[in-house]
Image (cartoon, rainbow, N blue to C red):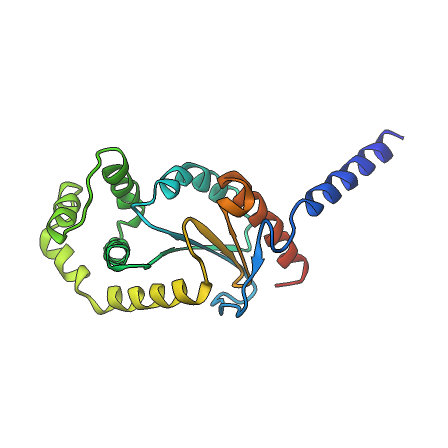
Length: 206
């Protein structure tokens, strides 16, 4: 009897959760799906900008979610490139990635912009920040001007355009669905919607 009550409670909870997320409200389907490069995996893209306060506040929640994400989920950050300033910071992100210091420099850059109120609007400012965190100036210059960084920047610009996002942070799940904090009622809501869509795609065998 207790087991039956527990199963019914679980079923009702599942129905409530599923009923709570509606296409066109908490998430929307992309008009043209993005190609996901990970067969058998569910790809989650996070579009962000270092200068975005919402993205900065999203970081702790995102990192907590990443620690417990399903094993079939591949997470990829994509710096949005809506204008030249955003594109410059996107190039900074990819420079850190090429140098192998993405995980170290991302929180440093967020803190510099949102806590220390540095604009990081020039190459000299950014290079000085990297140097202060152990990156040689010559290594920074080589990475910043590299083909790999430029190619990544072009792809980020293409994804920003094709995704149809109009703000950040935004999540794209498996190249098909987009959700934002505005749509989902906050950053935690956005992650709950992402979990729902991941389960939906996993159930389809994607």
